[in-house]
Length: 216
Image 1 (cartoon, rainbow, N blue to C red):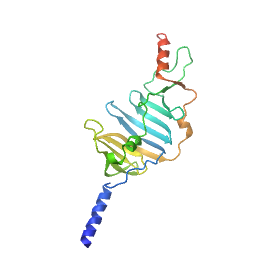
Image 2 (cartoon, rainbow, N blue to C red; image 1 turned 180 degrees about the vertical axis):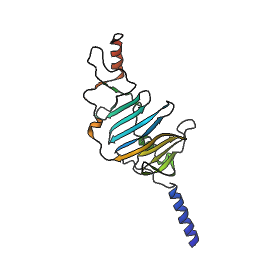
Image 3 (cartoon, rainbow, N blue to C red; image 1 turned 30 degrees about the vertical axis):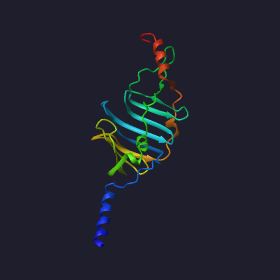
């Protein structure tokens, strides 16, 4: 019986070390700065990315599909996200007005979300632990989707106990990998659209472009 007991303890230790039986993250981390490298699949776009979160306030700086390198701020008061400082945004002013940078309202689905949002929505029933991980000096568990998220696409993420995604992969391709993580309240000014910016939406911008004379 003693040997059986020892074997059981040994097996449990091995399973724990492999992440088997790990508790699903509680996603309590609501304030942090997460910096790393990001790759957008199918867009041949990669580069630095920084996620700032302070409860419901969000800011993203980095590569963004169809917009190049950009800054996006989510304003919970307006329940909208705004694109600032896009390398792909050449339209800076309205006709007949002094040139001002634009804060362009993004359509729902265009704005980058915190990486943990999708994993929190999946819940423990739709993922399984497949190992332990350590990224940017932080320990986590590797979680993998039980079902493909697309044709022959399986996602795996290294997630901390409090729900911060340190690494995100699609099959063998790394979509995000953290370089640094700092928890805690973030400076309020990061989530405010500067007064020098003019807030517009696509419809307003399109109308202004129609009214702009050639070469204007």
